[in-house]
Length: 316
Image 1 (cartoon, rainbow, N blue to C red):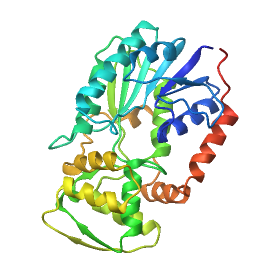
Image 2: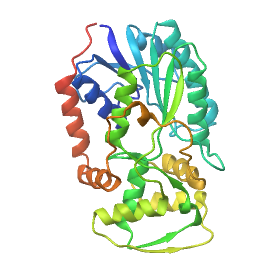
Image 3: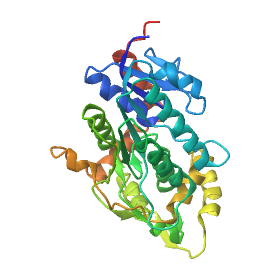
Image 4: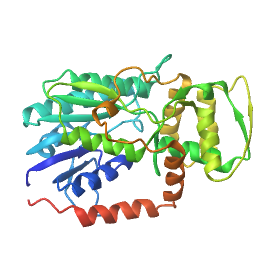
């Protein structure tokens, strides 16, 4: 196996595919880690399961930077404990195999009640940052992009329902950010490693409540659904209803909805201060771009084609 500039854990996911192409375009040798290495595209795919520590050492061998994009929301059991266990495995393997830097994409700290998936992301970041390998933790709220699970959930609600009952928890606010900006931040963190561990927020250009995001998504498709507020529907009941309306993974959607009980904080350092020449993509532009790219699987096929064109297989 050739040495790699970067190993991406969770490379087969939505962000991993975008990031792999962006890093390869810079001329970096990228190794793609996945629980089930893809056979759909040629490239440097390796088995790397954060819950199977024996797979991490071979995957990290010779890698300079590890990008951890893995979130275990589709797993049963105690999510915080699972993600902490996974983080310890990544941290230990990185130390043992001479990794110089870790980049982790997590989530912002809630201003009120903390859901299990946000607690797990914060715990993962803490475990990694407390280790001997310098770690840059980036915290993003909803990522606006085709095939993002959180955006898919909002898209389906906005595009399929002519009438929407808005529960009180949709008043919670956050700063959604476009996939283009998230990938730019990840690339910068990979190519400008810091000497010590730190965390940063990745706020988008606007802070707004979840119900306003729904309206903006509908507006990009020139829809004006009737919206009215209801006092009682809680996140748990809402997630059951979402299973009937959206194509999003039900178990993931349930955890995402539970995370909307509280607003997500932008307090703390923003990574954009380290990228003074970067201009954030306007929210409406990011939304309309995501809707246009979401064409029933053609987007994913195009990404695989780009990966096949840019990445070459490891030599055994």
